Each structure stands twice: as structure tokens, then as C-alpha cells.
Amino acid sequence: MPDAPHSFSKLAEELVGDLRGVPSDEPRRSKKRATQSLATIVEQLMVQHQIGRPSAEQTIRDRWPELVGAANAAY
Image (cartoon, rainbow, N blue to C red; front, side):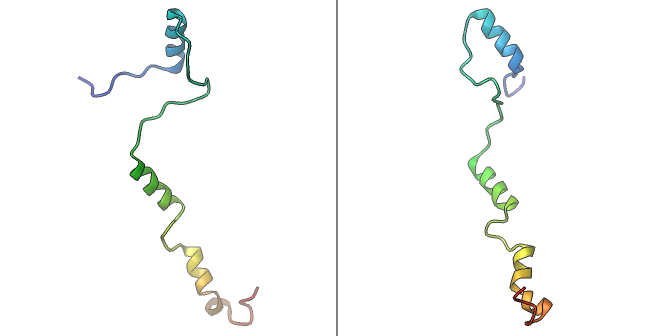
């Protein structure tokens, strides 16, 4: 027996709703997505945007005078 109930397409839900005379409360262009935990989403965003983690760009900025020399570091 499946754990989650079967999900029908938006078109099927609209057709059944029209047949039963039940108006749809959802905007036409919205998409239903599976619920995820907030901790998972925050962790994905922190990894994606490198929040709180050293990035390659920041390492280059920190060592820029050593890489190009003091005279060219202002550029």
C-alpha cells in the first residue's frame, strides 16, 4: 500500500472540480510541491550562496597584494 495518496494532474483536478461545481481556490499558474523541512532548505541555501563558509573569491581578495604585488594591488 502506498504511503502517500495519489496526486492527480492540475487539469484532472480542474475537470473534476468543474464537474462537481467546486471552484478552485488556487491560482492557475501555481505548482504544488512536496513539503520540505525548513532546516534542509536553509542548509541548501547556505551551501548555494556560501554563507558562513570561505569562498575562493574571498581567499583571492585576502591574498591579492601577495599575488600581484603591492604596487598593483590598488587596481
